[in-house]
Image 1 (cartoon, rainbow, N blue to C red):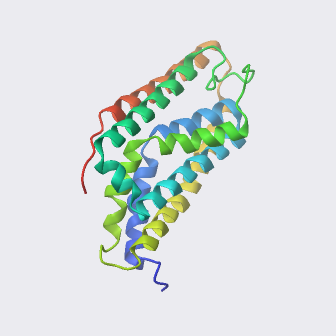
Image 2 (cartoon, rainbow, N blue to C red):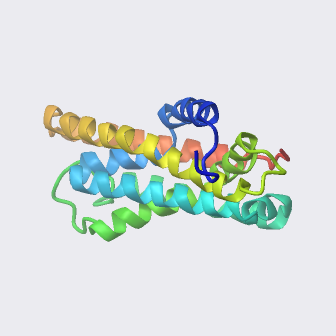
Length: 216
């Protein structure tokens, strides 16, 4: 087995542990669903890809030790928490405003471009300090500190997380597309969905603000 690969047991254990985190609802899943319901599967898939790019960035930061520095520096971590929470609050406001980006009706005044959906996915992961905490405290547990190949193995595990996430993200998008076709276009359903997404984003903003940096 190549030196940059962890052993088979580690790869399988990490895949199972990652699966639990991936299927747990979070702000990234809520964003994928909202983009898919409002703008179709292409926007949903592009958003999924954006979130996974964010995951790869976090993996690289952990592999090179930068994320550990962020968590160890309280002012930097606090700034990241506030940035992530503010971004989620903005998404919640967008969900309920007239003509907002999460409006279920197809005729939004300014629908996002594919690039905007992509970067929304990237930012939802990059500005979530709980993702930083997960990768800083969880990912390193699957490599040995004294292993000279620890950096490459950490990045490999990040890529593995992306590979596990991708089919699940696509399934979410496909399910959201089916849900869009099944839902009626009544104003009541539209308002309920918009306020539901707003509630989800606002709740995760509150959770992020209450997160505390933990040392592994």
